Image 1 (tube, helix red, strand yellow):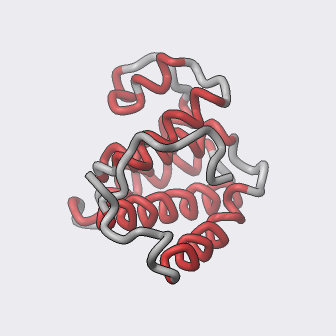
Image 2 (spheres, rainbow, N blue to C red):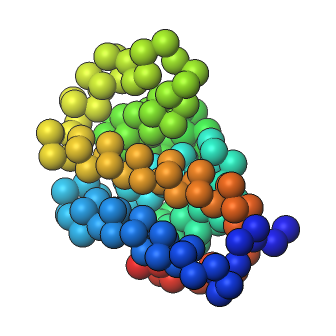
Image 3 (cartoon, helix red, strand yellow):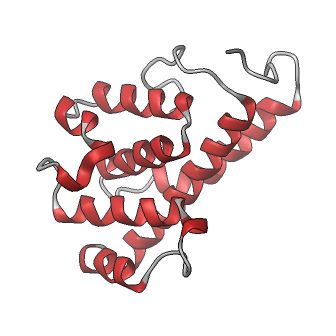
Length: 158
């Protein structure tokens, strides 16, 4: 698979990527939610959306940051895996409902929101919402472009 638009040939593409990256900085530059939790969110949304580029990137970044291999491998089956704490589970649950928003009658359910608020204050919840929205936007961008996995190096994008 090759990318549908080459960023070396289409001058607007890198500008758009830079704008996207800038929009994501508030979530990345804060120490409000653990980075490991944000990466779990990134990986799970990317898996759901079938974004091979982002799934590859976040798996590599998590491993490079020292994340346990079992936790990385079990993100897709987090409900049955013993590797995640209750706060991480709430974040993953929010990620799934928000990513699959069209599948539910009400979007994110009140039950899921209550679970999130048990573990995250308002600022932390805002960071989670922002991160989930950004990774879903990145996933869609890369899926539309058919941006292939396999060429990412740890930390390449920040």
